[in-house]
Length: 435
Image (cartoon, rainbow, N blue to C red):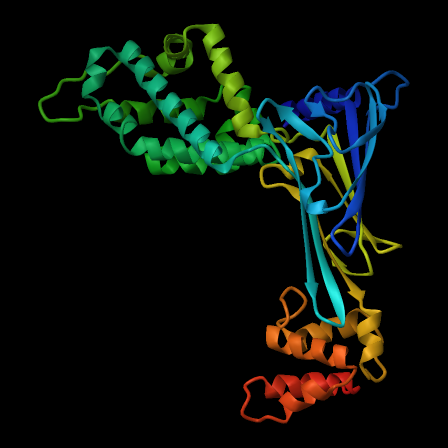
């Protein structure tokens, strides 16, 4: 694996000479859905050198709604307040043209009478559109097959039209090509971009076509000799596909097929076919420059020169978060750009804001307003903290608060004909101290 080791060393050297950018977003959430947000974006040389490090070319700072406190080539600082966080303007974007990242914000408050549970989520979402991604992968598969077919016609002559391979390129090999394109995208753009991992996943996708290539045939030892086993296997497979596709057809078997495929002739015809399809080298370049953003968005292909830190400060008492916890009802997540590709990456939090008025209005004996009590209450009135309370039960508890009496609940609990009587009785017992 000497070549792989040398490649890794080169990558490490290259990485140490690059600019990295830290994007920190801090959001303070209020119980009424309002909030404030601060943004700090800082670029620096990863090796610590004291030279100017410019922000990424595809970075766009915030616009309307934000006050820019600093705006330089290597650092941006901004802040804003919003009456509705859910409608907050974008703190930043990455990308170009219409294909730009999004920063989504979701806020939901659920009233449980004794308290309100605040559900909050924010995330960096890549510019990739799922439908367009599928269309792009389909286009890549079709181009590969049609260019391959045109190259074969040039290499093997008009007899190629009467071969099994021509039929298969227009038939079952299309599905193989689609599957292979998706696998390459999944591993290279959405995965680790590791060549060994890519081969381990991609090569089995060739088996439905009848081509079995063990990954060990493409390792460093085989590379030193020009991959002889893989070349021979591919040549045998192609030879088998060059048989006549219909009875009575005559197809000449090519001489020196392996040499034709791997020593320049076929590759030259592939380039010729690409040039004819796209109008030359500039056309090829333009097609790929338009295609690649559709495949990798802003953060695909293992992009890690941008790192995010999202910090959220919640109102009341933090109940849970899928991030790391800090003092002050705060939670945060850190991630590299590629982790936001293709479905996004962010943080979700939930907190409980107790109602002093409701607590003082009801004789809730020995109630300690903590997360355990809130969880227990949500299970009594609904299906747990992610649900909402049963409307009629919630209305009765609200009536109790307004009357400063448990009378409305007692009345329902004493009515055995009512379907909610058992639930009302349990809520009544809970408020009286039986928890």
